[in-house]
Length: 185
Image (cartoon, rainbow, N blue to C red):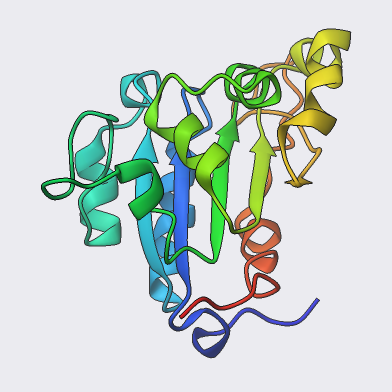
């Protein structure tokens, strides 16, 4: 894979959808590195994600307002779930929980992130992060092929617990998928 540089991410718009899992704290580092590499990053957080990391963290790292609700309009008359995706080159969902994967696979759009995924015209990349037993569950596996046009199938979370397989996608692997996304004008 080619090296990720400021030139490869300059003028790229990335939406990072943060879900409620312990690995949510790792996404703060992903956002920071993407911004340092020149990408414009907009963060969208689920309610559960806010139990692990606050929106303030991502606002400080991205330099942009964090979106947490379908009902907080960006401007008057804004259809937020469409507007936020118009300029995006990529929508990265990390950590992708079994909940968001199942929602998307079933077409359920009851929060801002699931609406964005449904309305997105850009590639959507899921970075699953969960307990190995959850990942191996046949129900979860059935949902994976139906959840995205582009799914990173690695599971794991960020703890050192022996019952958890810590295979959460690292920064370089996640960032490496971004330059292949076409630029939008």
